[in-house]
Structure formats: structure tokens, C-alpha cells
Amino acid sequence: MSSLFPALTGPPSGPPSDRVALRFGDRSLTYAELAGAAGALAARLPGGGARVAVWATPSAETAVAVVAALEAGAPVVPLNPKSGEKELGHILSDSAPALLLAAPGEELPSVTQDLPRLDVDVRAPGRLPGHVQVGGEDPALVVYTSGTTGPPKGAVIPRRAVAATLDALADAWRWTGEDVLVHGLPLFHVHGLVLGVLGPLRRGGSVRHLGRFSPEGVARELNGGATMLFGVPTMYHRLAETLPGDPALAAALGRARLLVSGSAALPVHDHERITAATGQRVVERYGMTETLMNTSVRADGAPRPGTVGVPLPGVELRLVEEDGTPLTSYDGESVGEIQVRGPNLFTGYLGRPDATAAAFTADGWFRTGDMAVRDADGYVRIVGRKATDLIKSGGYKIGAGEIENALLEHPGVREAAVTGEPDPDLGERIVAWIVPADPQSPPAEEELAGHVARRLAPHKRPRTVRYLDVLPRNDMGKIMKRALPS
Image (tube, rainbow, N blue to C red; front, side, top):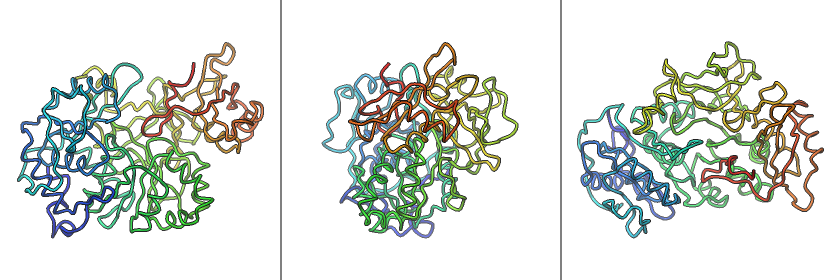
């Protein structure tokens, strides 16, 4: 398989060698400098398919380390610097990397002390390795993902999945080497690393990483030539909250070519506020660690807030009943589990053939565990996770996501999460967890129930409302429903 980054070879196939490829704060690397640093590091990496761990801080060192390893044919294990020692110890033991790549001076936890360390010099001169014997099925990344039980599993992502996803997104988003992406996402995850760093490099464009997300940083970069913004819903919520008092931010967002949100559903209320203030619509896409990207609203497609668009080129998608029977028609109301098939899929969980077999059907469809409805024209709307967001109440299958969207339209609600809990009459009753806009005067339970019933249907109204100061979220901004008080 050819290089994942043909742009690193320079003209005539790629961008000029003096074009900036990466910028982290006030530190930048041109394509020529990135190729040199990655080549120097690649020459020091072990061969034979040995895995290398990367201490994935939001830094140029992380980007150089990952590019170097991929150019050398070494699978990368990105490490979350915020992981606890127990989880980190499990990941290192499970993946058995040959060495750990980190920025010079980076202080590492004691659990890494027995692993050989190699510091990344982003200014080192070197040359990219010649032809490396790697194929599309060879692993590019091993990304650890937590399930509902047990320690995290390492999803082995092959090189063909990285290429297929990034090329499909280029088609959907009209993504080219002229685009300059800005984001402030962590680099140990598919969103920030694969889409946010490897994506621009595969296109021959540029990425500007904010280090830490802020509306001011977004406005600065969009005013300075950036064309695309990637973020998660918590980031877009902050932008929506800031916009009314910041016309300069509205103007900056308004001149972006593309605003993309992912990793969780963006509430419709935030969609509407951003569009009203900027004239721009936010594009949503849907993916997972194991599948990379499955669907997206297309840059040239019809705006449809609250949906994640249509399947990407090469991706097959179906909805199935609880017994695995595929839905035969799509009406925008019938809920089913999403199953996908295509070149974007991982090859399996590292060292876990049992878990890998359980994740796939006999004919090769991956069971995502996500519940959705699909319109007749193919647009998909996620309603929640099968394990935590599908509520069976009074004979109905109800997705938590649409109730959360309805609650967020109430002016007295700042944040909302919806779960189900056992009920002797209904089977499960709908419970709303609310962070009030004004903690001193929260909206009453009856008011919220009526608000939802008027917008959706009476059987979708919350039967219980619980008030919190804050909802538990992970590093990507997803609400951790299993961490809600019992």
C-alpha cells in the first residue's frame, strides 16, 4: 500500500515543501520540516511490525511521532495523558509496545518506567524511509475504547480504514489541500488524531491546533485564513452561548467554509442558535473507534439539523430489530440498531477473538450498539446507545436523544440527560436529569413534562425529573450516563 501521506513527498504530487503542515500555538512545521523530522524518527524505530506507544499530548511532537511511525510501518498506540495508572498499566500490558515516544522533558507516570523511551525532536533533519512493505490490512493504530464492562479493549485499525475514511470525507466535505483546519481536540482519539491531524496531512492541507479550545482562539484562526472547524457539542455549545454578545465571533464563524461537529449529538437548539447568528449550518457526522466514520451530512447536501447525514461512499448501513431482522422500510420513526459494513471497519480487538466475534454478525456486519431512525431518503438520526439510551416504556421503544433535544429547547434548562429506570407499570419510566439555567429557580417537573409532551408525544414525557449542578462528561464531552447518581 502506498504512503498514507503522499503530500509529504512534495511537488509535483503534493503541496510546496514550504507550505505549513502543522501549527501548534506559535510552533509550526512546513511539509519539508515534517518530512525531515518524521524521517529522522522513523529511522530509529523498530521494524517487524512492533507497536510503538505515543504520549498523545496536543503537541507537534505527537503529530511527528504518529506520522513517523506510520511511515515506518509501525502500529501506533496513542496514550491519553489523563489516564489513571491502573488503566494506563492495562493498556501498556495489553498492547506490549516496544517503546514510548514523547516530547522532550515530558514527565511520564511511574507505570511507564520500564518501557524504553525515545524523545521526539521536531527539528531533526532526516529523510522519509523508502518503500516500506506494508499492506492495507496491516495495522495503523491500536486505539483503546471502554465498553460497559471490563477493562478497555484495543481496536486494531488497519491502514486501509484510515485511507478509506479520510478519502470518503474528502468526497463528502469537498475537502482539499487548500483547506486549513482549526481544532482543539485531544490527540489520543479518532476525532482529534485521525480526522483532525492525519486528515489535513493526507489532503496536503494544514492544521492549526489551539492547544486548548476557546471561542477567542477559534475566531482568531478563522480570521487568519482557517477554512474548517472541527469540534464536539460542548465546544459548539460554548460558541452558541458566546455568540449573542460577540459579533466578531459571529463574523468569523460566518466566513468558515465548513463547521463540523462529532463524537456526540449536537442539540438542535444549538444548531439553530449558531445558524441564526452566523448564517452557517453545522455539519454532523457519525463514527466510532471501531468503524472510523460511517455517515455525514454532505457539504453539498440538504441541511438537516439533528441528523448525521447519509452513509459515506463505500459504507453499507442498515437498521435491525432486536432479533437481528433488518428493517425493510425507513419511515423516520421506526427505531433499530445500526449495523455497518465496509472498508472503514477495524480488523478486531487486540488479543480478544471472543469480543471480536461477538461484535460482528455471521455475514460481516458490525454491531454498533447505537440506535437510530432513518428517513426514506437515507438520512440517519441517532436516538442513543442501545445499552443506555433505548427506553422501553408502555410498549414503546423511545430514544433518549430526542427527549434531550426537546428539554434543551426549554429556556430554564442548561443541560439535560435522559435515562430509563424500572417501573412496575410501564416497564421503564423516563427520567430527566436537568442542570437548570437558574439553580435558584429550576423549572418544575410538571412544566418540563408538558413541554416535552407538546413537542413530541405524551408517552415520551419524563415521569421523574432530577436536578444536578453538572452532568458527568468524559474528555470528548460525552455525557457519562452510568456515572449519574443512583
